[in-house]
Length: 92
Image (cartoon, rainbow, N blue to C red):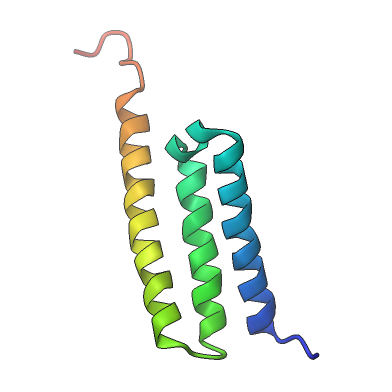
C-alpha cells in the first residue's frame, strides 16, 4: 500500500482526535482547557485537508462543523482566561 500526503495528514488528524479523547477520559477537566479545543480544531483541519486528496462530502461537513465548534471553544477559553487575569495595581 502506497502512502500519500493526504493519507499521512488524515492519520495524524485521527491520532490527534484519539489523543484528545484519551486525555479527556483520563482527566475530565482537560475539556475546560484551550489545549483540548485547539487539539480538536487541528485534528479536524488535518482530516479536512486529507479529504481534498480523496473527497467525501459527508466527512468534509463533519470536519468543517468540528472546526467551527472547536473555534468557538477556543474563543470562549481565551475570553475566560483574559477575564481571570488580576487587574494591574493602580488601574480601576
